[in-house]
Length: 484
Ligand code: FAD
Ligand code: AMP
Image (cartoon, rainbow, N blue to C red; front, side):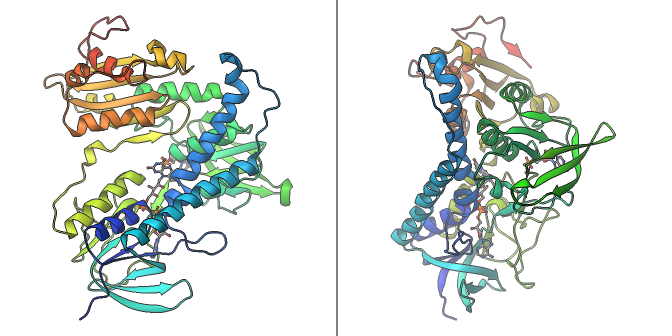
């Protein structure tokens, strides 16, 4: 049977578009089917990440951070400004422009690399056949040698707080408010809840974050989560742990709408009122309409597409990558999976190193980490050294008025290999790349201590923390090399 394409990718989020572009670069005749459309119904590439995730959230985080700096930090560094005002519609408009520039950029990359862009839905049938339904509703069956599924994820909704797209919104709605809500609730103190809570709190909203768990960011290094909790509280985020939302009621109409939230804490029920409520309780794999019953692809017990460590599904020649499969729901994890699968289809044998996936929370200060936390090492009974260096002792951090936070390195007590790095502080998202590179190349803490870092720079904290694991950091008094 003649084939329409050698590879069909379903989904053009970061996982899918990386896979499609790399396949084309490797000489494979590739098409990418993607059903996302914008407000006007026009097809858009880039998936959640570019349209409703990483990029728009960072555009608003950066804009709101600049507003806070201008209104309450500039005075401290000798810049007097008056008449500061947050222009929320302008911020939202600029965010849209950034998104549009990037999504059009992916369109350009598709055409420049020869990826056939097929707007519409894809459904996997048996034997690598795909039913393609265009946005106009026309259906046809496409034949391919390989299929890569990259349908991504969507926000989880919970019965006590149904999304109405107005008073109760998910992360997508929270990126589109045209005015700062006076009182805003957030359900869930995960990464998305903290980032969106920070945006609107910085712009003047009284933000209350309701989190069912008693622990704050339980998978983050203990010292980082303790310090971040204190810092965010000081910034005005009212984070209430052990607080489970059990019901909501939308009252009033139009601009007067409010949401009454009933929550349970310490066995007691209480109510609290908000103008807007953001539900940020996680994301689930999106597989609606993706698989025909005879596709041969199975789901795991949590509803993700089941794949092995090279992202192969149970169906021959069908792979799945990104948020729709196990592992951290992070854009860069899906990108690397997409590239790995493309190269495997082309006969190469790369692997994704799941032990070295960086995570970032874009609060201010930022949090970034890679590898093991101190708590995980303790629980595993491993012996390790700790080196930690505060931003307050870093010349560049002080010069930049960024003295909150620290860089902490955990290294194996015997081999000195770096096991985990945790950064709380300005530009943590950039600094963590050094740790990722070091760990990817199996560096020891001594290796990092022997490398020259530009002075003055925030990165010098990494050098000092590495020296600190052996008890000889220069710009702090080493009481002793701390050993776990
Ligand atoms: P998606 O980006 O979800 O893309 C899937 C695409 O497939 C979509 O376009 C969808 O329409 C399409 N599709 C689905 N089914 C079909 C079908 N049957 N036919 C055709 N097309 C289909 N991650 C980070 O790493 N860093 C961050 O800072 C970050 N911030 C975030 C902030 C927010 C507010 C949110 C919501 C997420 C954030 N994420 C972040 C997560 C990140 O967005 C996801 O991990 C990433 O988008 C997943 O990529 P993906 O390609 O797997 O899926
Ligand atoms: P994440 O999955 O990291 O985005 O985090 C989502 C958070 O939402 C988790 O920490 C959950 O404990 C929290 N959560 C889920 N349901 C509720 C609820 N009904 N009330 C309060 N918090 C919740």
